[in-house]
Length: 260
Image (cartoon, rainbow, N blue to C red):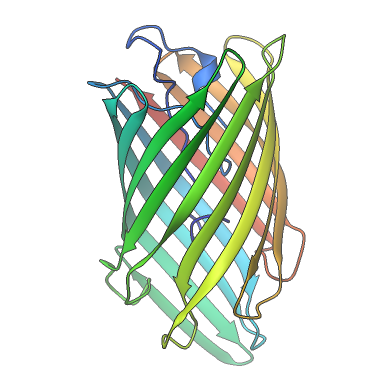
């Protein structure tokens, strides 16, 4: 996935929406970013209340599993087409197994700083760029020890009837497993969304990615449902199935979204 282990990428509010005129079109899939930005003077809180990653295989034959609780991103608009995003992994618990060896760690995760520039938009489509950095603020050995970062390019187009197609390309520089250098990780994802009612939206999503360090390619397929309790508050329930050895077997996520 675009951000390591259990950190799905974050969706944002369209820059042209007034604070009290938010609609179901705001919400997006769990992984594929929206190119829309938050309006200046307003905020979006997105919290993965619970994210579970099971059986992520490595090249040595071991498997990682993880549970993340309250991974949160806060976004605010700087201009009509530029926003600033701060994310924090509030609690991570990880387990690594290889044969009879088991290693468990838990603690506070890393901090993410991101910005999004919506540089092109017309009546139906939009494109943005999102540079980000990951700061090694973790405790309990649940993250890397060095700075990481990357660039995300999200695109979206809207169809008559309310459906939306999103796509995203991403490049990350990530610390390698030996912690003595960096690898590049290239990934892409796409999602198709369709509202059913003013309260419910369904979506399906697929992701693929490959590391320059020789790890197997990673692919996931899944979907979810969004339940809008109001125009400013909604829940997102999703589950993903790994398509390759380089992806986790399963990744269910429960996300809370709150705009104000």
